[in-house]
Image (cartoon, rainbow, N blue to C red; front, side):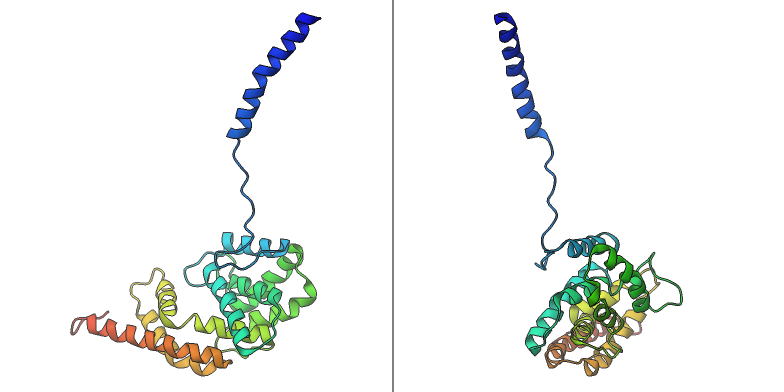
Amino acid sequence: MKILALTLSAALALLAPASASAAQEAPAVAAAPMATPAGIALDSAWRRTVYDHANTHLQHPSWGVRHSERNYVLGMALAEAEGMAVDADVLFAAAFLHDWGGIAPFAAPGVDHAVRSVELAEPFLAEAGFPMEKFPAVRAAILGHMYDKEPEGPEAVVLHDADALDFLGALGAARLLAATGDRGDYDQALGRIQRFAVDIPPRLKTAAARNMAAERVAVMTDFLAQVRRETPTGARP
């Protein structure tokens, strides 16, 4: 009996270090992020699902998840500057899903990208656990986000202006140039930079956005002027 006890003790002593070592070597499971890089709280399961979807599937240099994150942050800042009460859940869902329908492979030929985004967002949000009584406001914000639309509702107004501002300034120029894709030149992008500097500011709905637009338009104008200065006489940029 004594010999059996000693044998068991020796076996346990041999196993213990191995078990501890195995535990130390086991890879740690990464915790789900609780905030986006800009610090937007991912404090509910549905928010984490939406952000994970956008971060995984909606990558695009012009219309992707980084643009969505800027839209949310800027939209909340505009709401605060204007003293507007907005539902952060509505703005979050709309900001991160508003361009979904314009990104391959989700786009549908002949369907406006905002309309397509709503079609995709409704069942997705329902399954994710979003409070669907708020979805009409999400729909309004997505449908009204483009600068040439008339937004209805506070979340739609601030998303509209945030999205428009992201077409202006150095960021706007970068986005439009990135959208050139596989074109043989960037004439279209330069033309849009010039046109948006004129067309967008009068369509902004909030005073805060109009104030911000002035500096961004000046940046775009200076950029186009510098492009012209750097282009040799008779050549094209």
